[in-house]
Length: 268
Image (cartoon, rainbow, N blue to C red; front, top):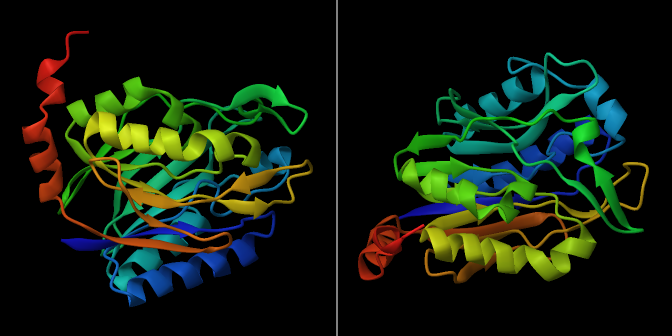
């Protein structure tokens, strides 16, 4: 058994304020005894999208160095849910998760594959691919508690990715997100629980919450959660910045998969 924490933030274009908020929440989670802590998508910046590209950093840049040092300071596994990583394509960056070990070492890097290009309503019109270059690699990180499959936000709607992650050894799934208020209120919890149920895995889903200064009407749904392999929500954050904390029993995955061997029954 170990304690995990999903951090809920309201990130903006103020990178220093975002860093202080994340640092404080991560320290609080570690103080409670969390050994695995995850932050949301766009942890370091959630503002105008063209500016996001201009401010993009390399993997050895200041944002990654800061979070690496924080993981080492608190001796935790720490997932930087995502940051704007510089790509080799002018005008577009990657939306990138980085997992650090308790020595601050970089254990895994995942670049968001599925991009949020939608026209749902007047409040939700967004073309992420204008400023983000999609990744191509499915990533499962090794941890002391088993494989941790990495994904980001809009990936959540593509069940085939999670089947690939489980086939690669994942028993725990990360879904750092910034779900919009419009889509989140109807789809966030059903989709997160569905991914847990169909893969029979633990899910840690940290999320952005509240209004951001990205030049539009952007407001995030929040409701960060941790879900067990049976689909029960075992921890949930409140209506503002905060934490969802839960004890995770890795043996629960094997028990659920043994009792209902869905992977063995698959025909397609």
